[in-house]
Length: 553
Image 1 (tube, rainbow, N blue to C red):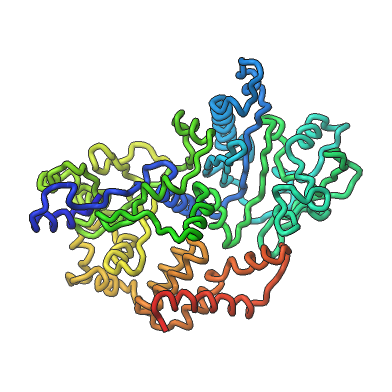
Image 2: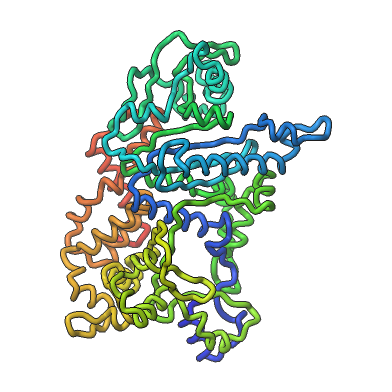
């Protein structure tokens, strides 16, 4: 893989063989489960969130090995469900697809605008799906009745709803843990990491941090588990209709609609668990896999070294089932400078022949220019707006006018401010309509500007640090606080920020949005509150460390 310009430069130097240039060890975004695959899906989720606002519900659906389809599928005597992974993943995929269909058709939570799901595999457990959904219902004026109509955290009355009582007893009771079972897997530092048992609550409400506290009354209803009588404080939030239909563990949560929503997407699209392998590398003083020939990180070996694949994951991949999908689809729009788009080629290819293929030079961006040249009506749209009325034909690498209007969300690839000209090119693509070429993008007020940065300045897109505020705000929609801290340091050190103090005052809460929760985890108290002055002090310590690593004094 290499850019057109780099290939051209290499050919001019006399390099004509494919094995003499490019990066050989890359896992592309199309590789299911790879790092780029998960990052791209994460940014797609943020794009959906930008279109429809914060999501409404978060659903975790876990496979039930006692499903009748699994039990009846085992024909050999003495076999258990865990011995037939193929049956487990096939039935779970059928059930998951049915659940997603119910959600999209509005049978579960009412009319739905968007749905996103990811399938995960526990090392010693069963496959489960994480589902995030956006309903069409206006949830800005939130009421306890609205949440209670979809989520319950109470034991049904066995006299009124015996089936609901039996299913909640089997699938939706946590633990017991704590003093009743100190060896329970949820126990960390002597406390339940899921914060069970919950406290009694007479009415559903949303706390100051944006988390829903569900109605949990003190009554005479109990469930016997492990010789203990457990009441409503041990019930996992659920939707009783879904529980009755699918008869499995289905945890339903009302989503936190504050700035922490990006951590929800990060959790859902985090990919495989690699931390233990990484820590072992550190302990053994091992380096990241490195290819000495190309002088680059060997991403394929890194993936193979760090990936744990259980038997359910193996069968899922063999059968070709999706591990991630979202509706509506998101069009990923590349941003590149002239002849700077990357292409893939065979190591045996002759690079002069590769350069002669005009087809490889066609990208969404270059063909947007062509469409604007050929179709005057296309010039009413910016590059980012273009997929709303035109569709990209991958085979011919061209834009075709849409015959039917379908929901379509698009996003431009993120560009770091340190990329300079590409960063300013992206800024122009967000506002300029009907550009005919890269040169045309730099034309404004009768002047042909030499750089994209000067064109941005001419259009009033620069000045008063507004471009850095905009770049930071865009990154904040999809980045964690650690990533934002590194971006902040980069901007201060390498970008022309005029008023650093005003910039810090504007963004410091975004930089520090996880410090409060880190301390809550440390002290084991989910309602622990820190003073703003203390949070700022800890943030400044973290920023000082990053500045020091960046070579700043």
